[in-house]
Image 1 (cartoon, rainbow, N blue to C red):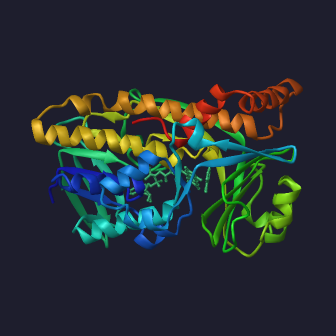
Image 2: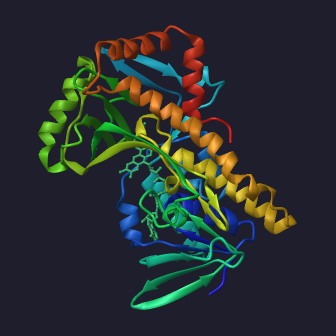
Image 3: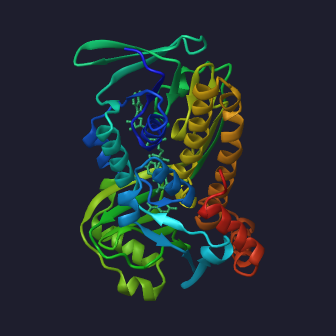
Length: 390
Ligand code: FAS
Ligand code: PHB
């Protein structure tokens, strides 16, 4: 088989890029190692920047999102039992965020690819990249005991943090930057009415918590837990009790609890690999960078990668220019690192650190005091949260 762009990974990054390229006449093949059902049962991001939402509309995949999403003009930070509102709309010059689950967004992208005859190969095993430093790269994979080869012009590694693409770049070329946090997030999804119309980020001496949602009948909650915890250590009742212990009393009193329909612990790390290009291989999304979810930047950082890569590939196929492709890594990393900074800042400000000294704790309090006493500080938070320009 031959195609123009072979995309490894059928998550949001890979599918969005495939859809945008298709609409601009560029052929792609997407190779996904899991089944469609497996991909669509994963519960991940919940908040989209307005730039991501716009890209979904440009990809002709925004209709259900616009029909079912919620538009949020702010969120709350709770500390010492008090709710403090961050007015995103006021401080970002009129912008807001779209609350729409990554699961649904991925479903919309999957359906659009199928509707438009896109080639998305699920259950593609043993994907391997070949000759990516040459001008004739190819990809092999196995499925149903047969081996396949795809010759292509370019390979895009959109296969997430544990994918094969980044590992195909020689160690001598790759520069990695990583920070591991000494805690994780225990997340619960429940068919309950959300406790608040807007998200609540909680700073508490017992640990961070977050009240989010997927719709008015589907709530998403998180509590910070030690890295040694396992999902099975936490009964539903234990989770709800701990969440209530961290919420302001008025909020805890109105919390609607129910059975966890999904419960998982995600470790927190910050990670960036440079460059995001090697020969004919381009990395996009979690394949190249990871953030702690505190700033809701994970999926949103992938969006600008996809945007820059989409632009560069269309420019190349339309005009022969390599300029967009040659500047991809530098352009993408410039925005990725701003998302890294914001996610690190939100994480350091709102979590309890086992080895923190009193000076660290005073700095956390001062950060919050400054935030709620300065329009400039609030504007900085707001412009990062709604999404810096692509
Ligand atoms: P993904 O990891 O989503 O997709 C990569 C795809 O490649 C997967 O489908 C995988 O099966 C496939 N793949 C991997 N190796 C392969 C191989 N060798 N061959 C073929 N296919 C392969 N972000 C937020 O903003 N908010 C959150 O609350 C949040 N929560 C998260 C919770 C968890 C547990 C995780 C892991 C991430 C979370 N994120 C969150 C970040 C997440 O949303 C990512 O940013 C987003 O999934 C990035 O999308 P992709 O780059 O497409 O990577
Ligand atoms: C979520 O709804 O899963 C979510 C929202 C905001 C975050 C992290 C996770 O910062």
